[in-house]
Length: 272
Image 1 (spheres, rainbow, N blue to C red):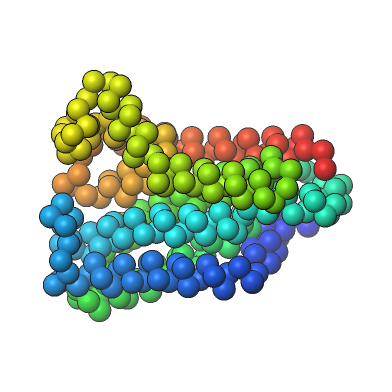
Image 2: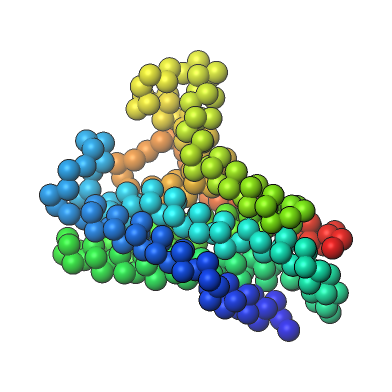
C-alpha cells in the first residue's frame, strides 16, 4: 500500500469518528456564525475593525477559525500515535513493509485531511453567506490565499500534535502537551509578545504604536497563528507591519518542514 492510499484510509477513519459529532458543530458555529455577523452592514463593530469588502469579512473571521479549527486539529490528532502505542498495534504497523518516513507522512496527511475537509466545506458555505448578505464575493486570488493559509495552519497544528502524541507515554499526556501548545500560540502569545516588547524598551501602553506593531510582526513569525495572519494580510493594502514577504514565506516554509521532519525522525527512531 502506498503512503497516499494509507493517508486516505486514515482520513476516512478519522472523519467518520465519533468525535467529529462534536467538531462539526463547533466549526459550524464559529465559521458560519462569524461570517453571518461580520457581513451584516448594521453590525456594531469596534472602531479598529473595518469591514468594507467580502475579503475583509473573511480576514476578520480568521480569529474564529484560529480558535475552532486549530482546536479541532488537536482533538483529531491527539491520539494519532499514543493510542496504537498503548494497545500494541503500533508495533504491528511499524513492522509492515513500508518505510517509516512514508508511514509518518501518511499519518500527517490523513489527520490533516480530516480537519481540512470540513473546514473547507464550511468556508465555502461562508462564501455563500457573505454573497447573500453583501452581494459580493472575494476575488479568486483572495480565496486562494485564504485557503492556502488555512491549509498550512491546520498542517502545522496537526504535525505538532502528532509529534506530541509520539513523545507521550499515554493519551493523557498527549492531549496535555497538545492543548498546552495550542494555548501557548492561541491565548498566551500576546502576553509573550508584550513581555518581549517591554524588555526591548518599547512601551506597551499603546499597542498601536509603530514600534510595538513592528515587534509584534517579528514575534508573529515564530508562531503558526502569527504566520497565518501574515499570509492573509498580503492582499490588504491598509495593513503593513514592516515584515517583508520573503520573511513571511520563509517562516511559512520553516513551519511546514521543521515539525514534519522532527516527526519523521521520531517515527524512524521510535521503539514501540
